[in-house]
Amino acid sequence: MTTLSPDILAELERQAIELPSWAFGNSGTRFKVFSTPGTPRDPYEKIADAAQVHAYTALAPTVALHIPWDRVDSYDGLRRHAEDLGVALGTINSNTFQDDDYKFGALTHEDPRVRRKAIDHHFACIDVMHATGSRDLKIWLAEGSNYPGQADLRGRQDRLHESLKTIYDRLGDGQRLVLEYKFFEPAFYHTDVPDWGTSYAQVAALGDKAMVCLDTGHHAPGTNIEFIVMQLLRLGKLGSFDFNSRFYADDDLIVGAADPFQLFRILFEVIRGGGLNHPDVAFMLDQCHNVEDKIPGQIRSVLNVQEMTARALLVDREALAAAQRGGDVLEANRVFMDAFHTDVRPALAEWRESRGLPADPMTAFAGSGYLARTADERVGGTQAGWSA
Ligand code: PSV
Ligand code: MN
Ligand code: MN
Image 1 (spheres, protein in one colour):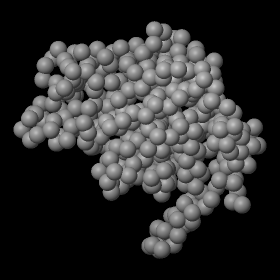
Image 2: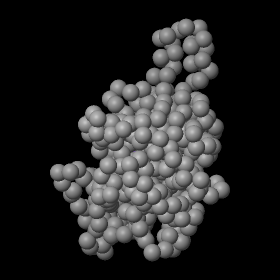
Image 3: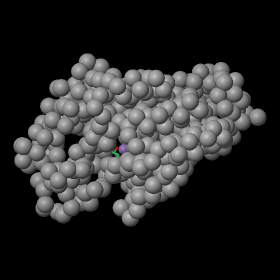
Image 4: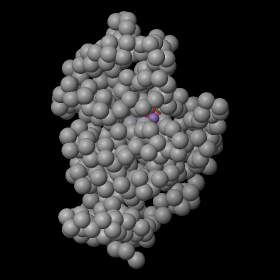
C-alpha cells in the first residue's frame, strides 16, 4: 500500500472545502427539476445537511450562501445555528440574474436606476457578511448580449468598473470581493466578464481586496485551466475556486467525475504555486445534484478533491525539476504520471480511521439513517433556485 508521509498528511489535515448551500436543494435543467424526499425546506436545513458532510469527512467546515435564495430573518441566528452544528458560514454569493429589471444587465445596465438597484443588492450582501462573519463577496454576473450590435461592449465595461468600484469601496476591513468569469450563458454572443483576463483587469483596477474566482466549468472545451491557475497565483490574484466538472458546458457535475486528471493537474499547479492551504485561496464547490442524492454527492465531491490533492502532493518535485532541467521529456512525464496513477484510497482510509473518522464516509453516512429520517420529517422541500 502506498504510504503518505507526515508532511503530506499535515497538508491534507488542513485542507478545507466550502460547500454551496444550493447543492442541498432540488435542482435540475430547464426540462425538469426532480425532487428528492427530505430536501431542505429552508436555509437552516441546508446548513444541517452540509454539517453532515463535515461530520463524516472533516473536510468541509464552511457553507456558502446565495442571496436571496438563502434569505432568513436573522443572519446572526443562522450563524449561531451553523456554529452549533460544527460549521461556519462562508462566502456570500450575490444574485442579479433573476429579476426582470436585469434583462439587459445589472452592474452594466444603461439605466443608472437599474445599476443602483444592483449595487444596493451588493450592499445588502455586505451587510449579511457582517452578520455571518463571512470574508468573501462572490460576484457572478449574467450580463451580456445575444446579437452583434445589440450592446455597446466598451460602454458596458466602463460601467462595470464604476459599479464594482462603488461596491468595493463599501467592503469592510478583512472583507474581499471575488469576481467570477464565465465564457457564455445566459448570454450567447458576448458576456461582460467572459474570461480570466477580463476578471483580472477589473479586479486589478479595484485594489488588493479584489480577486478572481475561477469556476472550473466556465471555460471553452479544451482550455488549459491549470495554466490559468498558475498565472493567477503568480499574479497574486487567485481568490477562489468554484469546483465542479463538466462534459459539455457548465454542467455543474461532481468535481473529479468527468476528468480526474484535469483536477489532478489543477491541484498540482495550486501546490506548485503555494496555493494549497494558502489563506488567500478559497476552495469551494459549485455543483448541483439533479439525479443523485445530495449529501452523498457532496461527500463524494470533497473526497474526490482530497484524493487528487494527495496524488498531486505525491509528485516527486525534485525528480520532476531535474528531468525538466535536463530536457528529459519522457522522464518528466513519467514522474508526473506516476503520482497521478497512484492509488491513495487505502492510505487515506487508514488515516481517516486514525483520526476517529469513518474509513469510508460514503458507507458510514448511508448506514446512519439520516436520509430516511429527514425524508420522514421534512415534507415540501424547496427548490434550490435556478441553477446556472
Ligand atoms: C454561474 O454559472 C455560477 O457558476 C455562479 O457561481 C452562480 O452563483 C452559480 O453558478 C449558481 O449555481
Ligand atoms: Mn460558479
Ligand atoms: Mn456556473
